[in-house]
Amino acid sequence: MLEGFEIAIRTLVSVVVLFFLTKLLGKRQVSQLSLFEYITGITIGSIAAYISLDAEAKWYLGIISLVVWVAFSLGIEYLQIKTKKLRDFIDSKSTVLIKGGRILEKNLHKERITSDELMQQLRKNNAFRVADVEFAVMEPSGEINVLLKKELQPLTAKDLGIVLPNEKEPQIVIMDGKLLPEPLRGLGLDLNWLHHELEKVGYKMEEVFLGQVDSNKQLYVDLYDDQRSVGMQQQPNVQLTMLLKQCEAEVRKLTGKNEDVQLQQLYERFRADLERVVPDITTLAKK
Image 1 (cartoon, rainbow, N blue to C red):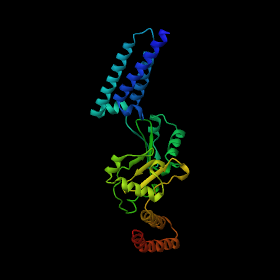
Image 2 (image 1 turned 135 degrees about the vertical axis):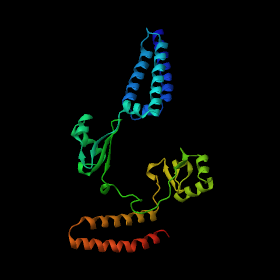
Image 3 (image 1 turned 90 degrees about the vertical axis):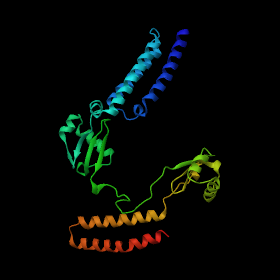
Image 4 (image 1 turned 180 degrees about the horizontal axis):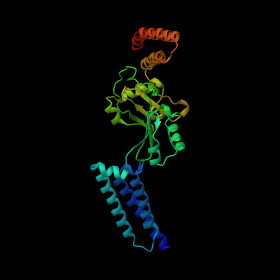
Protein backbone atom coordinates (compact mmCIF):
# COMPACT_ATOMS: atom_id res chain seq x y z
CA MET A 1 0.00 0.00 0.00
CA LEU A 2 2.81 2.40 0.94
CA GLU A 3 4.64 1.50 -2.25
CA GLY A 4 1.56 2.32 -4.33
CA PHE A 5 1.18 5.64 -2.55
CA GLU A 6 4.84 6.44 -3.25
CA ILE A 7 4.37 5.65 -6.96
CA ALA A 8 1.32 7.94 -7.05
CA ILE A 9 3.27 10.80 -5.45
CA ARG A 10 6.25 10.23 -7.81
CA THR A 11 3.92 10.29 -10.82
CA LEU A 12 2.23 13.48 -9.66
CA VAL A 13 5.58 15.19 -9.06
CA SER A 14 6.95 14.08 -12.45
CA VAL A 15 3.83 15.33 -14.28
CA VAL A 16 4.01 18.75 -12.58
CA VAL A 17 7.76 19.09 -13.18
CA LEU A 18 7.41 17.91 -16.79
CA PHE A 19 4.59 20.40 -17.42
CA PHE A 20 6.59 23.41 -16.22
CA LEU A 21 9.78 22.32 -17.97
CA THR A 22 7.90 21.77 -21.25
CA LYS A 23 6.39 25.27 -20.96
CA LEU A 24 9.93 26.51 -20.45
CA LEU A 25 11.02 24.84 -23.70
CA GLY A 26 8.28 26.72 -25.52
CA LYS A 27 5.71 25.96 -28.22
CA ARG A 28 8.26 24.55 -30.67
CA GLN A 29 8.48 21.39 -28.57
CA VAL A 30 4.80 20.59 -29.17
CA SER A 31 4.66 21.68 -32.82
CA GLN A 32 6.31 20.11 -35.86
CA LEU A 33 9.49 18.61 -34.41
CA SER A 34 13.01 18.79 -35.78
CA LEU A 35 15.37 15.83 -35.32
CA PHE A 36 16.91 17.20 -32.12
CA GLU A 37 13.50 18.15 -30.69
CA TYR A 38 12.24 14.65 -31.46
CA ILE A 39 15.16 13.15 -29.49
CA THR A 40 14.54 15.63 -26.66
CA GLY A 41 10.87 14.66 -26.42
CA ILE A 42 11.63 10.94 -26.26
CA THR A 43 14.38 11.39 -23.65
CA ILE A 44 12.35 13.66 -21.38
CA GLY A 45 9.41 11.24 -21.54
CA SER A 46 11.69 8.31 -20.65
CA ILE A 47 13.17 10.19 -17.67
CA ALA A 48 9.67 11.10 -16.43
CA ALA A 49 8.66 7.42 -16.61
CA TYR A 50 11.80 6.48 -14.68
CA ILE A 51 10.92 8.97 -11.93
CA SER A 52 7.40 7.57 -11.67
CA LEU A 53 8.00 3.81 -11.69
CA ASP A 54 11.52 3.02 -10.48
CA ALA A 55 10.72 2.79 -6.77
CA GLU A 56 14.18 1.50 -5.86
CA ALA A 57 16.01 4.51 -7.30
CA LYS A 58 16.26 7.91 -5.67
CA TRP A 59 13.56 9.98 -7.31
CA TYR A 60 15.36 13.32 -6.93
CA LEU A 61 18.16 12.03 -9.20
CA GLY A 62 15.60 11.75 -11.98
CA ILE A 63 14.49 15.35 -11.36
CA ILE A 64 18.13 16.50 -11.59
CA SER A 65 18.55 14.57 -14.85
CA LEU A 66 15.35 16.11 -16.22
CA VAL A 67 16.45 19.64 -15.33
CA VAL A 68 19.91 19.12 -16.83
CA TRP A 69 18.48 17.77 -20.07
CA VAL A 70 16.01 20.67 -20.38
CA ALA A 71 18.77 23.19 -19.63
CA PHE A 72 20.92 21.57 -22.33
CA SER A 73 18.02 21.76 -24.80
CA LEU A 74 17.48 25.44 -24.00
CA GLY A 75 21.18 26.07 -24.55
CA ILE A 76 21.08 24.35 -27.93
CA GLU A 77 18.00 26.34 -28.97
CA TYR A 78 19.69 29.59 -27.91
CA LEU A 79 22.77 28.74 -30.00
CA GLN A 80 20.55 27.84 -32.95
CA ILE A 81 18.95 31.28 -32.78
CA LYS A 82 22.34 32.99 -32.68
CA THR A 83 24.28 30.82 -35.15
CA LYS A 84 22.98 29.81 -38.57
CA LYS A 85 25.78 27.28 -39.13
CA LEU A 86 24.83 25.38 -35.97
CA ARG A 87 21.15 25.64 -36.92
CA ASP A 88 21.87 24.14 -40.33
CA PHE A 89 23.99 21.38 -38.76
CA ILE A 90 21.41 20.36 -36.13
CA ASP A 91 18.16 20.88 -38.06
CA SER A 92 19.66 20.48 -41.57
CA LYS A 93 18.68 22.62 -44.56
CA SER A 94 15.66 22.57 -46.82
CA THR A 95 16.06 20.39 -49.91
CA VAL A 96 14.59 21.21 -53.32
CA LEU A 97 12.95 18.08 -54.77
CA ILE A 98 11.28 19.58 -57.85
CA LYS A 99 12.35 22.66 -59.80
CA GLY A 100 10.59 23.99 -62.88
CA GLY A 101 8.49 20.85 -63.25
CA ARG A 102 11.54 18.52 -63.15
CA ILE A 103 12.31 16.07 -60.36
CA LEU A 104 15.83 16.36 -58.92
CA GLU A 105 16.63 12.67 -58.49
CA LYS A 106 19.90 13.24 -56.59
CA ASN A 107 18.11 15.24 -53.90
CA LEU A 108 15.33 12.66 -53.83
CA HIS A 109 17.85 9.86 -53.17
CA LYS A 110 19.71 12.02 -50.65
CA GLU A 111 16.54 12.37 -48.55
CA ARG A 112 15.66 8.69 -49.18
CA ILE A 113 12.25 9.48 -50.62
CA THR A 114 10.66 7.17 -53.16
CA SER A 115 8.75 8.46 -56.17
CA ASP A 116 5.54 7.03 -54.67
CA GLU A 117 6.06 9.01 -51.46
CA LEU A 118 6.80 12.16 -53.46
CA MET A 119 3.61 11.81 -55.51
CA GLN A 120 1.60 11.20 -52.35
CA GLN A 121 2.90 14.45 -50.84
CA LEU A 122 2.21 16.32 -54.09
CA ARG A 123 -1.40 15.09 -54.10
CA LYS A 124 -1.80 16.31 -50.52
CA ASN A 125 -0.86 19.76 -51.86
CA ASN A 126 -3.41 19.51 -54.73
CA ALA A 127 -0.71 18.88 -57.34
CA PHE A 128 -1.48 15.75 -59.38
CA ARG A 129 1.03 16.38 -62.18
CA VAL A 130 4.75 16.94 -61.70
CA ALA A 131 4.72 19.28 -64.70
CA ASP A 132 2.37 21.63 -62.79
CA VAL A 133 4.88 22.14 -59.97
CA GLU A 134 7.29 25.09 -60.00
CA PHE A 135 9.00 24.14 -56.72
CA ALA A 136 8.67 21.33 -54.20
CA VAL A 137 10.80 21.76 -51.08
CA MET A 138 11.38 19.34 -48.23
CA GLU A 139 11.65 21.27 -44.96
CA PRO A 140 13.92 20.25 -42.03
CA SER A 141 10.77 19.00 -40.24
CA GLY A 142 10.17 16.49 -43.07
CA GLU A 143 7.18 18.36 -44.47
CA ILE A 144 7.05 18.91 -48.25
CA ASN A 145 5.75 22.29 -49.46
CA VAL A 146 4.66 22.80 -53.05
CA LEU A 147 4.44 25.93 -55.22
CA LEU A 148 2.35 25.53 -58.37
CA LYS A 149 3.29 27.29 -61.59
CA LYS A 150 2.02 30.85 -61.86
CA GLU A 151 -0.67 30.11 -64.42
CA LEU A 152 -2.12 27.36 -62.21
CA GLN A 153 -2.30 29.39 -59.01
CA PRO A 154 -5.74 30.71 -58.00
CA LEU A 155 -6.43 34.33 -58.84
CA THR A 156 -6.18 36.79 -55.96
CA ALA A 157 -7.60 40.26 -55.47
CA LYS A 158 -4.14 41.67 -56.25
CA ASP A 159 -3.99 39.77 -59.56
CA LEU A 160 -7.37 41.23 -60.47
CA GLY A 161 -6.33 44.78 -59.58
CA ILE A 162 -8.70 45.04 -56.61
CA VAL A 163 -7.44 46.96 -53.58
CA LEU A 164 -8.89 45.62 -50.33
CA PRO A 165 -8.50 47.26 -46.92
CA ASN A 166 -6.17 45.68 -44.38
CA GLU A 167 -7.90 43.00 -42.33
CA LYS A 168 -7.72 43.31 -38.56
CA GLU A 169 -8.06 40.45 -36.13
CA PRO A 170 -11.73 39.49 -35.57
CA GLN A 171 -12.84 39.85 -31.96
CA ILE A 172 -15.08 37.50 -30.00
CA VAL A 173 -17.69 39.64 -28.24
CA ILE A 174 -20.06 36.89 -27.07
CA MET A 175 -18.97 33.56 -25.66
CA ASP A 176 -21.24 30.93 -24.10
CA GLY A 177 -24.15 33.39 -24.10
CA LYS A 178 -22.23 36.04 -22.14
CA LEU A 179 -20.98 39.44 -23.22
CA LEU A 180 -17.21 40.11 -23.42
CA PRO A 181 -17.10 43.91 -22.99
CA GLU A 182 -13.37 44.54 -23.51
CA PRO A 183 -13.14 43.24 -27.15
CA LEU A 184 -16.33 45.15 -27.94
CA ARG A 185 -14.86 48.41 -26.61
CA GLY A 186 -11.62 47.69 -28.49
CA LEU A 187 -13.58 47.81 -31.75
CA GLY A 188 -15.11 51.16 -30.77
CA LEU A 189 -18.55 49.60 -30.30
CA ASP A 190 -20.96 49.44 -27.39
CA LEU A 191 -23.73 47.24 -26.01
CA ASN A 192 -26.44 49.19 -27.85
CA TRP A 193 -24.78 48.41 -31.20
CA LEU A 194 -24.59 44.72 -30.31
CA HIS A 195 -28.24 44.55 -29.26
CA HIS A 196 -29.23 46.29 -32.50
CA GLU A 197 -27.29 43.76 -34.60
CA LEU A 198 -28.82 40.85 -32.70
CA GLU A 199 -32.29 42.28 -33.25
CA LYS A 200 -31.61 42.31 -37.00
CA VAL A 201 -31.24 38.52 -37.00
CA GLY A 202 -33.89 38.00 -34.34
CA TYR A 203 -31.82 36.39 -31.57
CA LYS A 204 -31.14 37.04 -27.92
CA MET A 205 -27.68 37.09 -26.39
CA GLU A 206 -28.33 34.02 -24.23
CA GLU A 207 -29.12 32.02 -27.39
CA VAL A 208 -25.67 32.77 -28.86
CA PHE A 209 -22.87 30.25 -28.37
CA LEU A 210 -20.30 32.47 -30.12
CA GLY A 211 -20.46 36.00 -31.46
CA GLN A 212 -17.58 37.46 -33.46
CA VAL A 213 -17.09 40.89 -35.05
CA ASP A 214 -14.64 41.48 -37.91
CA SER A 215 -12.77 44.64 -38.94
CA ASN A 216 -15.74 45.67 -41.14
CA LYS A 217 -17.93 45.59 -38.02
CA GLN A 218 -19.94 42.66 -39.30
CA LEU A 219 -21.33 40.30 -36.69
CA TYR A 220 -21.01 36.52 -37.07
CA VAL A 221 -23.41 34.57 -34.85
CA ASP A 222 -23.36 30.87 -34.01
CA LEU A 223 -26.27 29.65 -31.88
CA TYR A 224 -26.62 26.79 -29.44
CA ASP A 225 -29.37 25.51 -31.72
CA ASP A 226 -27.49 24.39 -34.84
CA GLN A 227 -30.70 24.33 -36.88
CA ARG A 228 -31.06 28.11 -36.46
CA SER A 229 -27.40 29.09 -36.80
CA VAL A 230 -26.65 32.09 -38.99
CA GLY A 231 -23.36 33.21 -40.48
CA MET A 232 -21.72 36.26 -41.98
CA GLN A 233 -21.57 36.71 -45.73
CA GLN A 234 -19.16 38.72 -47.81
CA GLN A 235 -20.41 42.09 -48.97
CA PRO A 236 -22.27 41.68 -52.32
CA ASN A 237 -20.32 44.44 -54.13
CA VAL A 238 -16.99 42.72 -53.35
CA GLN A 239 -18.31 39.36 -54.53
CA LEU A 240 -19.62 40.82 -57.77
CA THR A 241 -16.42 42.73 -58.49
CA MET A 242 -14.29 39.62 -57.88
CA LEU A 243 -16.54 37.53 -60.16
CA LEU A 244 -16.41 40.03 -63.01
CA LYS A 245 -12.64 40.41 -62.75
CA GLN A 246 -12.21 36.63 -62.74
CA CYS A 247 -14.29 36.34 -65.92
CA GLU A 248 -12.19 39.03 -67.57
CA ALA A 249 -8.95 37.31 -66.56
CA GLU A 250 -10.15 33.90 -67.77
CA VAL A 251 -11.16 35.29 -71.18
CA ARG A 252 -7.77 37.02 -71.49
CA LYS A 253 -6.03 33.74 -70.66
CA LEU A 254 -8.08 31.83 -73.28
CA THR A 255 -7.33 34.47 -75.89
CA GLY A 256 -3.58 33.97 -75.49
CA LYS A 257 -3.66 30.16 -75.39
CA ASN A 258 -5.98 29.30 -78.29
CA GLU A 259 -4.37 28.86 -81.71
CA ASP A 260 -7.64 28.97 -83.68
CA VAL A 261 -7.83 32.42 -85.31
CA GLN A 262 -11.64 32.57 -85.27
CA LEU A 263 -11.81 31.59 -81.61
CA GLN A 264 -9.13 34.14 -80.79
CA GLN A 265 -11.20 36.84 -82.47
CA LEU A 266 -14.31 35.70 -80.60
CA TYR A 267 -12.52 35.73 -77.24
CA GLU A 268 -11.05 39.14 -78.09
CA ARG A 269 -14.57 40.54 -78.69
CA PHE A 270 -15.75 39.05 -75.37
CA ARG A 271 -12.76 40.57 -73.61
CA ALA A 272 -13.40 44.00 -75.14
CA ASP A 273 -17.07 43.84 -74.12
CA LEU A 274 -16.13 42.89 -70.56
CA GLU A 275 -13.55 45.67 -70.31
CA ARG A 276 -16.23 48.12 -71.40
CA VAL A 277 -19.02 47.04 -69.04
CA VAL A 278 -17.06 45.91 -65.93
CA PRO A 279 -16.26 49.46 -64.66
CA ASP A 280 -19.93 50.52 -65.04
CA ILE A 281 -21.29 47.43 -63.27
CA THR A 282 -18.69 47.74 -60.50
CA THR A 283 -19.66 51.37 -59.95
CA LEU A 284 -23.35 50.43 -59.71
CA ALA A 285 -22.57 47.58 -57.29
CA LYS A 286 -20.85 49.98 -54.89
CA LYS A 287 -23.96 52.12 -54.55
